[in-house]
Image (cartoon, rainbow, N blue to C red; front, side, top):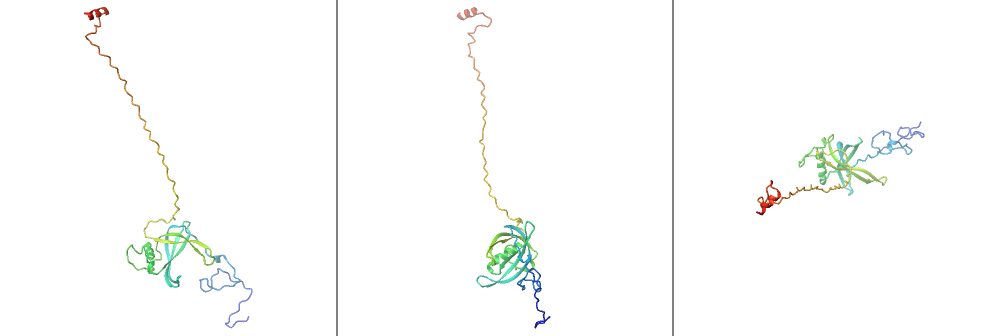
Length: 232
């Protein structure tokens, strides 16, 4: 077998093409070269996004790093990338990368984050201690988010961090359920029926006319005697 100038054996035709998804020989950033006849495997389909429902969740900080990027004004900026892990109701663990630019007007967002993990109190002036953020956590609010994919041009529905909530806020991990409009309760007021008992009037006893006792005949006299006595 002939060798090239570098002492390496040339690649032979008929060899099995390299498969996608195999661990690269050097590096692990996915930038290694592949053969144009490479076999596409399930690992090359790309990760599917587990979309979180809008609501409030508990989180744990798993990693952080500082990076440079170029904004829309072609300015090179530095930002912090904070990896937080959230557990959905079905047990699925979802990692969200919250990116905060290191500029003065974003100071409120950093204050919000360090207040949420309990590393800062309201109104305090403290340095951002990044060495002690991994493993700490708190509560955050998730909102729906959509963006246009640069690769496909399609809209992608996902989620993002709306805000970090203060420590010991007592918020629940369960997502907020949609508010159901309550029907107004119609209270039918029953007319108050006051049953008045009829007033029972006692029968009036008619008074017998008072007769002059002097003109009444004695009870033991007969009619004739009584009449003669009356004429006298």
